[in-house]
Image (tube, rainbow, N blue to C red; front, side):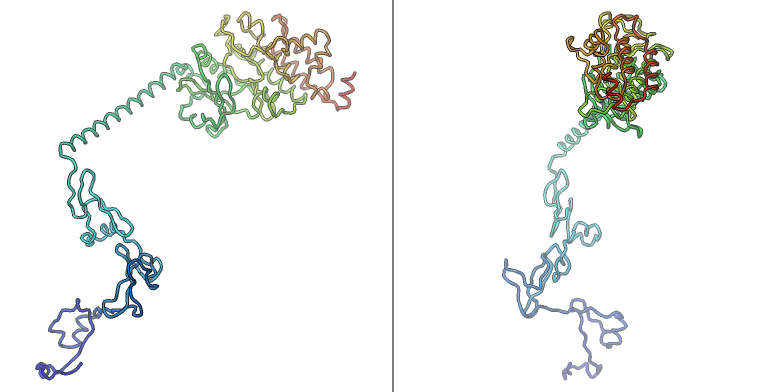
Length: 508
């Protein structure tokens, strides 16, 4: 500061002072002449000032050249100093932050700033739909309009009449789709009710001990990955239902006769509660082809145990247990229920085994209640290899028909040979022929696996029992209850001999 002699005010106000302040901020006031004390009272927090700096030993490179090392952020730019030589680093447009550190300049979300700070709406103008982009933002006209949304010049793309027509078409389409959906839903419910009635629902819903399942409950189990059995009848699926393992039987096709049999099967099994008969948990009648839900039996069928790829070891004690248990189940059906029940299709595939090799009779698809059906049938259904020849010729199913089929199963269990449909190689024919000529010749057909652990008396009794089950004269066949008692006696009294003792017994 220096004194100017031409300053006439000096004599009146003999004081001088100066201050550094941002030029654009400061506006002169007469009070400012009273010195620092007045300014301190007027601006207790001080006044703003601007420090202009630059990196002096370099300058901004030409366009396309590498930025100076000071500009470290990828989204920074170089500007020449305003005063003097040198340069400064700044964030590119649309970015904010510190250009002197890596990743210091970050994208500005202009659309969010517009919402959070209304004062910035003039800076980031948008009269349409705002969408943030890297380093900027995009503003599009709303649906049905076109133009520049940043300047607010969006105009309708369609005439009013066309817009009304479009809205009308959309409205009509929505109504039509809604009506169709309701119609489909109504049709689905109608079909579900029809299936329920067709499959005997009004009758079966009155049956005790049988649960009616909705098709939605079974849908997660009826998947190809859950198939555990497949055949001409259909498929069997394994899955969890109410936290219990179950097997669901789904038939491929059901004709009018089989519809009646399906209802009959459920009625029969609702009356049968026995440890050697498969338990029917429930059924689903809301589909065209009804489904049955059974308890799950882990070891599968006797057929698989005897002839599957991984044959189970079956000593005689285990085979006697299977035979006696299956006979007990059939005897219960024939003689120990309020109404005589006939199975009609006894075969190894319809005898299931649990973890303890205890048998459970299954598949009552062609069963008959004597009280319901006493007449002959023209439609003989079942596996011919195990079928009573008298039933096959006459069509009359009796308790002795089940006895004959059980005899074939018992023979297959003892020989571990399949019952063939060929008359020349049929197991039953070979056994009966051998028995007629020489009892020992028939016993020689038995499985060598257990011949080494038993004695000829047991084998002889088993051979006699098989023959009595397979007699052609129906009246002379044994009753199922008698077959059970004899097998139970053999099971209880049988004591396996040592292999050496058994070998000498067989040789004798």
